[in-house]
Image (cartoon, rainbow, N blue to C red; front, top):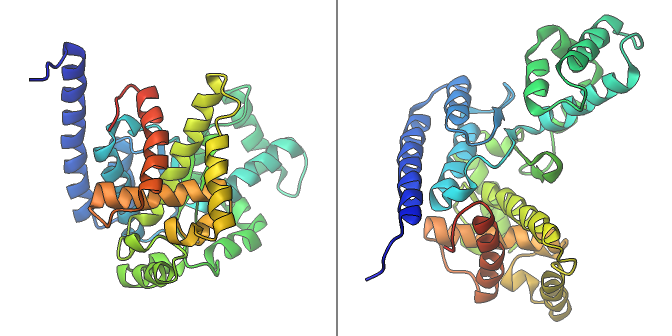
Amino acid sequence: AVTTTLQEKTAEDKYADLRKNLDEVYKKIDKANSLRKIIELAQDAQLAQYVYFDNDTTVYSAKVITQGFIRLYKAFPELHGKIELLSTPILDQAFKDFVDQVLRAGPNTGKFSQIYKKMANMLMERAKRDPDWGDIIDFYKDKSIRKVFEKEYKDQIAKLKSSGESYYAYYWHYHKSVCLGYTSAWKSPEEFMRFWNSDTQTRFHPPNSKGNPYAIIYHELGHFIHFTYWDIKLKEGDQNWMKPIEEIYNRLIREGTMPDIFSRYAMEDKEEMVAEGFLSYFVYKIDGGEKPSQEVINLCEGILNKVLEYYGGGKQ
């Protein structure tokens, strides 16, 4: 028999409670019929420190994104709440750029000086530092500021909303933010799966993710895990931590086997190779999809176990 220590039992109880709560939230999100309700449920469940989707986000896409996060957290509860921001790209990219521009310009310059002054004063009153995501979201909700932003950034906003890509998503490690959404692919389950499945058939993305609406979330969270691993290894003084990953990448590119073992998109660079590996690994581990190659499993588990241990857990 295996003896469970009090510390391990406490952790098991903590994660059992978390999983139970996440199950309830998952069901509530499933029944939700408004974007506001989904944001509220996701924020209360601490899927990220800040959760905010722009009004153009469809209810369907918000459900897919938040439920994808829940599925991962249930499987690996140590990761729960470690993401700082979960949002749509317009808030992360365009509006953050607008705020930065205002701060650089100062309170008394620019075409809309009163709004600039208001924003600059609000920032200076709150903190002598760069604004955090809570500040950014508050500014975004302010109608007068939003009006100026939408006028000044009309072209950038239109470009984001009409992206020719089938889906639009990225992970930004500087703020530990995951941003997803905004294109035609997110309007309905059928449309999204049509785009995604087309990519899996050509091995642009791993074939085992065919029909899986959470695959793109798994890819972006794979970036989060990889970059967290990067931080941990550097804190430990390991300057050569990337070498084993580089060796795998270079060998598979040289052999021409990257599309077969990971995907065609994994050929982009080492970071995308790791993210595509985690996409395939999570589809297998969380959703019972086809098992990826042992090389993918070994790479992902080596990185993941280190991150889980860092966050207070053990090997999975």
